[in-house]
Image (cartoon, rainbow, N blue to C red; front, top):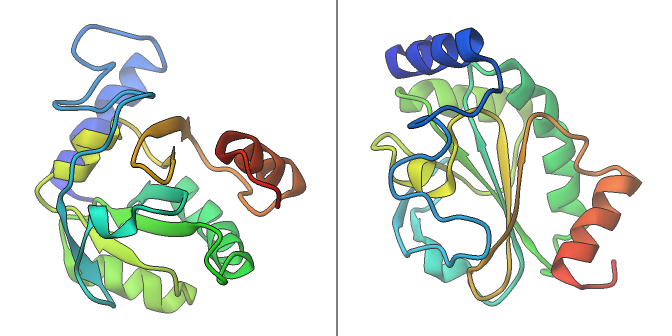
Length: 173
């Protein structure tokens, strides 16, 4: 397990889900209702992109790590969700917080994940999105505004999740 991840996991395990000063928000976090800043994203198994290149369509961002059990648990449902909306109704991307690129790439290959994933070794996206625990899934509207943040593993391709996504994005799915 990576050093920063071990520290984060240890702090969170010790503190549980209590809100404490300094742990509730990450440095530079964009809260729900705020607009994400443009950042360069380093591609994993695909090209690098700017976050702004994804504007114009609703966006689902999943923040994960290869060592995170709940992250691995929900990844298949995100893959199925991305395939369901392959015709462009919305975009699904992943942001790995792994310290080692090869570990993230190996996981993606073994799991058969085809939607775009990026690595965040400098914590820029992790902090901006507010990923003080994993997994984190952020729903972003077509203009880059954060609509909602969900912590913990979820079946993203379930009827309940799809209905919730449609409500947030105000689209008919």
